[in-house]
Length: 114
Length: 366
Image (cartoon, rainbow over the protein chains, first blue to last red):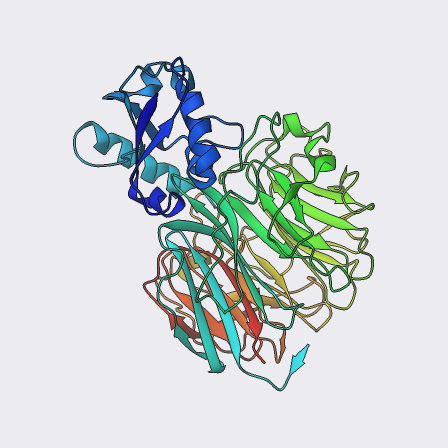
């Protein structure tokens, strides 16, 4: 079945300039299968989505439909027919709840390297 | 040694990309546009073994991972490996975070480039830095599960190759200490004898010392100088034993230490107040020089701010350019870059308002 994948703009240079790609996967597939299929066609996209051990990178968010896969089983998240997948950078900052996260990041940064 | 020349290049890694400065007449430099934007450049290196200098950057994206990038046109363009070129093998249970050190091998090892990363491990390239492989002898060392991170993380930040014996390697890890190999990285042993660690029950542990930086004497390759978390040390046997050097610095805390590129027994440090303050000692920006292998130290201040200067210079943000007379360069976390074209006698601020400077390397230009 076809799965449409939306990529962060930073990843488009590794997908021939496309921000939206359609890949063909088996009908009964999880996100891991989608990531592998992307990697077969666009190795640079997969490399920037998962780390050395194949886990989704800490500051990358992957969505299946509207759901962040961190809360739906990660790479084991099932891909329903017609699903859309998005690979995006995590938003690390901003107002409200994000502000606390931003401040924490600044504190961590302050203690690094020295 | 490059005598009688003054054209030089400085590679600067920052928390927000890199910059390259060029000079036809030190210490006047022109700063490039921002390079590798959006990436943290913990380490830079200049490999002068080829016909043209090759620049390296140990670069990390907050989102997309890390890579060793290279430039063969003095920073105008950089490689961008489609698939990361420095990775732990499957099953290692680790992923490369930051690349703290890129170090070209010796003159008798063409194509060899080493890299030190976080989590603490050593990688080696045999193809001029295009691809790297984990040095498994160090990764599998029985001490590794007990290594503890320093304030910056568990990082391998120093790599030295012995000038006369390519079999001998020495690395430093925060906060695991110094490790040495005599078989080109096949096997390793802790080399911290004599380095005290006041924050542990055993003041002289086999490993676990918070070593900040090590630099090798240019004439005597067995002589090493160390800036430790709490002291300056010297080894005269490539790390077998270390002796503390107590004289003449306002603080024994600091990060970088740089040996003179030609002159024996000569090295430079930038003392900082205690681990609590972490700024230039006494609010004065002073470089200290020894010419007697660390027995005594003298301040070098001309051209450096001496009032209200609460600066931090990180472990890889201080270097020489290998020329004669030696140029010296250091960058601060507040984004200023200072240069000396006369071996530290006088200094000039050659760039300001850069992002926090993490790494600095310089070399002569033909």
